[in-house]
Length: 385
Image (tube, rainbow, N blue to C red; front, side):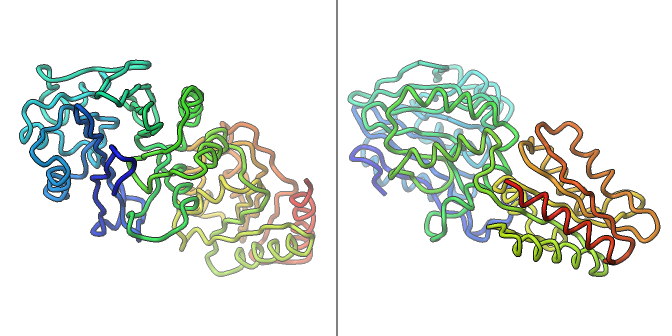
């Protein structure tokens, strides 16, 4: 695949993987992206997962012909991108590795070598000339590791963005970018919104026409659309008005309460109402939806005097990723001593700009006239602009 006249795609698709990082379901597989800039000097941008060494090296050889690469630029040290640094260096011993100082420390941890003889350490504003192509580097500290850099090719106006702007899914699978990019962002990068904001501020100095991430497709049309989404996500602002109702239910009564609330919200004109059963859904998808919408309702049972485990895990995922700037409502169920709402609220005690919708709905085993009235009042509160 040709990105520009001089920039070639040399990455691979992984359809063997079922769980990315051992926790994210990826039915569409994964892409491990790598690129080559062919100029007076040749730069390879990142390596790929160790399971695809031979395929990746063959992609390189096909483009190089009789030439040798001059530089390997390492943007990020996670093994799905860095695993073949040593293999490439063995094949092309004269290659010079370009990375941040922290990345070389990590190379020593991973490979027992920091490549002292053949290396260039770069930081903000440093430049590398390949001939016609001038590469400018910027630190992307904690997006989402501390060694990350990004590279801007000022000649072709291409940003090599490391894990930023990536998504789940192989490149030969047709699927919408935004939903899987949102799930990827909030699953993996979401905790580091302040760091993403700092990087976005740096990107304003560059005229970016194309974004080449380490996962997902090359983005070359309406680049500002993707940058604007990253701005919204990293400021933890809702993408759109809507209510996500996330529930757990043991015998079905809590589900009935959640369903009744959804019906009342729709009747009152709420434009978007989404229900998710936390015991059965993909938690990473539901976390992404919680960040997508402006309002969240959590409905669960008291369990061992605390919270049903799937609900507790879901809230932990949210708070770990700095969930904020939202309205949150609660529905609790307990046959003799409902305490779930209190414990759920406590889990958000360090979350900023959370408005708790009143009333907290209380079920004593099943819906009755009183709890239905509370749901009616909660629906009124959630439907306010």
